[in-house]
Length: 238
Image 1: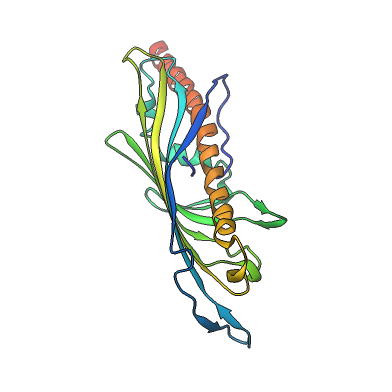
Image 2: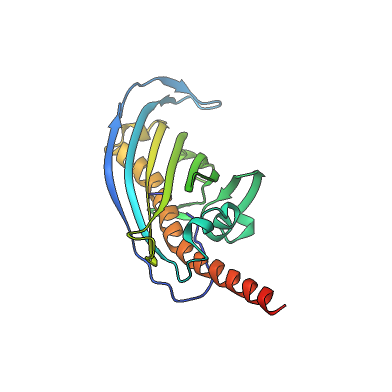
């Protein structure tokens, strides 16, 4: 799942592995049109290059259920907790409404250009399937000269899967779809490999979010399971 942030979970030794497999990716109309524009207070013409990129890929990683009473399916219902685990720094997340947050992603470095993107994150659980959507990306931290108006939408789904009901190994499997629309100003619209460069910037942002999910969810699941166990033990002692 090429979906940032650096998640921090609870303790516990819980090994996990993840992988992503591209399914399809294509650029549509990498140079669909060029229009001469003028910026306010700037006599230089601005050439607009419009590009659209879409891709889809599979993702998979492993979580371990040590107790049948504390399942991965139950954990995936904890939507708020999953967001907090993925974005543990409170200053980097702001609740907009139920299931919807504005998040500030970790600082990126693209050939010496540093920026911290912001985006709208939606997380929900429907029918046992965890949904994650990223949209409204804000790249205003980029220098004016290379700030690119872009519309990015990432839509991902994760569902737990076991080989047998008694198995402790639970694989989270899913797919993520990404669509990216870009308007590139002059002189960058004339650069070779322009589309690839823009895709690399935003693709790196999404990759870090995917990596954060793969790291933080197994760790936080272990922490959640232990806290449930302690709570149940206290009830039994009463």
